[in-house]
Length: 221
Image (cartoon, rainbow, N blue to C red):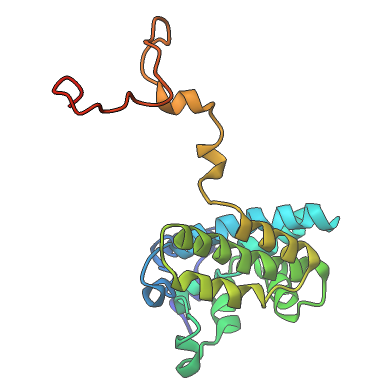
């Protein structure tokens, strides 16, 4: 018998919230093979939930259900750690048992365990969208690493693209591959902002489009 079994429900809920905090300190382990990039499971889960909401809106599916499936999809990793694709060749984990132990005594099991089963079975459109959201978050990170010069990220992107289950996920993936990860902020301001952003723009000297040609004289040097 675990000593946690005698704790009140409210105490177990606090235990649960503390356990969720462990995801901030649980690294996504695949980046050690890629050579660049890093994130923790909490960071991954947040954007995966956002992507799931977006995909469900695109598909006309249940947005809230999809986002919740995404939000809790890696909760068990607070106990098991993150297994990347190389790890899984040699190691296994009892993910369902880890999640059940996490939820024991909290009263959350009847809500969250069916979501886990739905996600694993991928029988609903929301579950398939959630699975795609998981891959798309990885693809966004890989595209960033590719833009920054990691050529191996392109190989990973090609593999991740093959795992997508839904038309909406595939459409979003194609656009991810075509979009520079800095466009959202770099293309936003007028170009003059980047050229002359400091101080007032009044009385600025005119800047010639082309510099004067060097005629070889001392004054031109």
